[in-house]
Image (cartoon, rainbow, N blue to C red; front, side, top):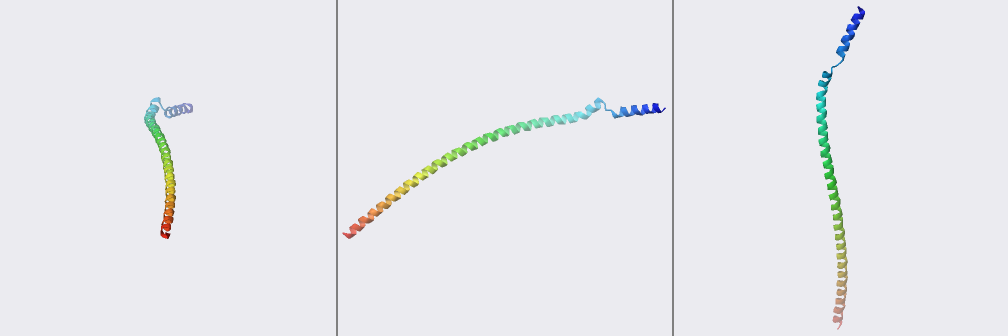
Length: 112
């Protein structure tokens, strides 16, 4: 009798402890669907990120090009300002020489 009851208990434990394929499939189907949705969403987000990276790279190239153009314009403006300053200094020196000559002529005319 002990063997018989041990056998019955063993069969009951084994039959209730194991899950059937259909039970496992029913449990995994919702998880599988969620995983599929998440994979699709991840792929979509990845493509958007790649697109944004390309746009950022293009904008960086434009910014670099604009910075180079600004530097070139600044260098040109600096050169023009420097040349103008030199011409102004030369004009001021010429004006001072003319003023000195005029002063000397005035003094000579006053002495006569």
